[in-house]
Length: 408
Ligand code: ADP
Figure (cartoon, rainbow, N blue to C red):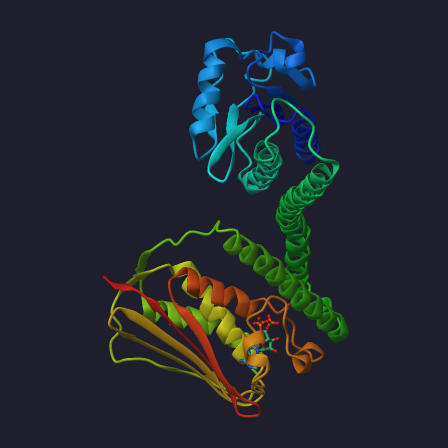
């Protein structure tokens, strides 16, 4: 962003404005001009500060009208680049905005700020706050009754400089945060793509050796390869979960509704976890006598069921797991109940946090990054529903959720 000019009414304080403009320029790495109304850009000493005004080529009646409009407005006013604009005007979708400088409802001037790209929304609050500080200094001058341009007291300038410095820190922090968010997004997208390709190839090769060279492998070799395969699959799921969760949080995931055959969904969910069940665990389903065809987001429903059943399978050594499902008043109700290790009351809220794992499960043989429930809950909420847990240590857990569906 570039600051082109600060326009103020004629009785304002040159040096206070110059300081404000310098601060604005430092905050947003642009450059600034201070202009006191009553003079025109053609009079070079009307500009206190820098020399970019000529590049902007804004002058005359058009400029006066714009300044007047911005001064009387509550919000920043945009001016479109004129025909055949030179370099500042000509850049992208940005254009130039006039920010009204007001104090106690009174107009005190206009800051003319140019932005080569789309206007960075995050900075508006910071800029407006700086302008409020400038207005305060100007007001002090007006209230103290000075005639014509004059210098404010050192104390006022010192205070205003301090306030401005704080605001600049704020803007810079916001800018840094935006940058960190962008880096995080790039890292997550790149990491999951770049790691998944080689990991996929490792998994495929191991499967191929296990299938084609089965007879030639010693039992130790087979076990080792099965271990590699299990770890590879777990890592792959983890990468997928990280990417999915990130996308949901970024709001990049949309709900895609389609006709869903619930009987098939249930069979597939059970099929997907059957290999993870302990030998002494039975998995049962409890369903109404007839299941209507519903419309919902099939992929998300599959994902949610997988995470809940996979957890039940991981944390249940013996006994049973029950998948219950019913539909009433346009709500799909699902619960997964297990007779597993259970979750202590203190941990029951935290298990939905990213990367949280109960201590006892972190050091056990269970794999997982603590993302399954976070993702399941985010997906359920995306579908307009809610997920809850009831659990008792040593007796088992019950995860249940409802989501609105339409009956087709
Ligand atoms: P993970 O992928 O590590 O299983 P989750 O987010 O799915 O992560 O679960 C977080 C933690 O909640 C698990 O590590 C475990 O400690 C606990 N948990 C989840 N489901 C169950 C369950 N059915 N029984 C006991 N503990 C569970």
